[in-house]
Length: 197
Ligand code: IMP
Image 1: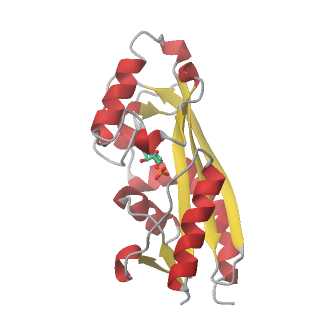
Image 2 (image 1 turned 90 degrees about the vertical axis):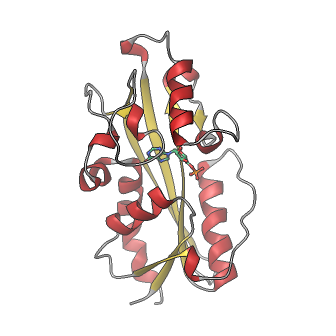
Image 3 (image 1 turned 90 degrees about the horizontal axis):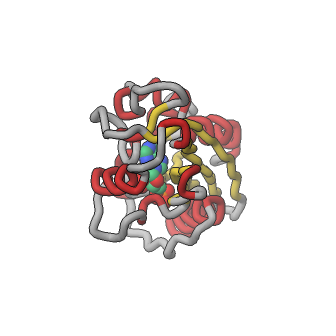
């Protein structure tokens, strides 16, 4: 089977890439199977960030690479933190701390105004320089307290429209079936036929 490197060090993303593309006809390999790759600093554009991550890995390793750039856009915050979601609140916070910080920032925002959307742009880079890109979105709302232990990142404070169950309470298959990452990777899947072709 042709190999594709998953160009991310985020273990939550690695699990989701593997589950979403299970049976897609490629062998998904982690970055840990290779010598370390150094990635450039991220900017504020999902597509540019996803492309540069996938291209950097594909060029450095000589193997096809997939990467994503994703984030949470909160309406009451004018779309923040968006592409800066991993950096929201500063370098001292972990996933749980960032989610708590978000809830604190939204403390006075009423139920009907807590709309948000997860966005994911996924990029597949081939060693010959070709890059394919797809985008997925998952609209929903920010809860008032974290619930659930699954998923990663902001999953415990995010629910689908009109729901009170967080993404962290869904099983992996349910989340991947409707998530921004699931949608982006499903849209990108037909391009996998080009890997090794
Ligand atoms: P980046 O794509 O590495 O810049 O990181 C995106 C950040 O957005 C993650 O670190 C999470 O904080 C957040 N994020 C992206 N996708 C998800 C998701 O599926 N669930 C929860 N948080 C997510």
